[in-house]
Length: 242
Image 1 (cartoon, rainbow, N blue to C red):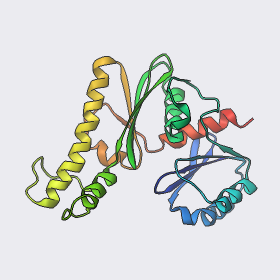
Image 2 (image 1 turned 180 degrees about the vertical axis):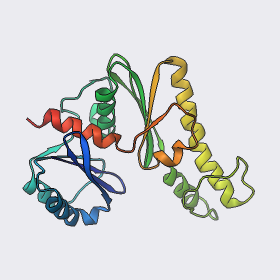
Image 3 (image 1 turned 90 degrees about the horizontal axis):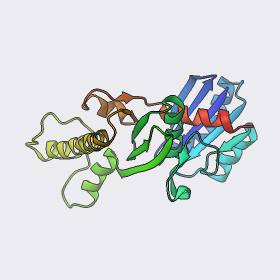
Image 4 (image 1 turned 90 degrees about the vertical axis):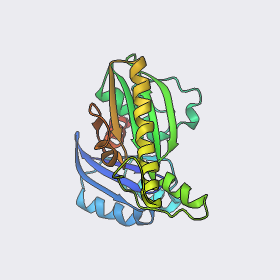
């Protein structure tokens, strides 16, 4: 069994893989890390190796607790990846994006793949059919857009995410939902349309915490896979642990 840990900007996601299948999965806040790690160790005593991807930080105590339990691989840009990285500043590339592109290279060989990850940020990453990672784009995620409207104005409220009922909002709240959610959807559809003009044979993967929220409002032909990053990390662990 392999332990896969993704430390995001907001939450920690953890999965235990038994061969190629997810045996156990949990999402939790960082302060619960050691407690959750102890629980998983008891529930899954056959874990042999671990990998961690972090766009945020764990405390030294938390990281030490993990290293004491398992041989640990810390994802970084110098590892062996299943694609050619043409990003001009690889040291600045988020490790979560490296994991996502690794999943694309492993699962969709010789394909043009656009990976859209909707979490704290919305990221776009493109892998071409020659197995070359060309880069992508980063924009604010849904919650960040809601927060920005509240933080940078005097009177606009901070709202929980909600699918707008119509294109035209007739209250302040419905106008915010229309602007934030439909704005993100139009952005995503615009990126997809632009890539499809250049690459007709395009596979599109939608992942991240808001993937299924957005998927129902997007056009067909998009694969929603909330476990895509974890699958990429598992692949990297299997191919870098020796």
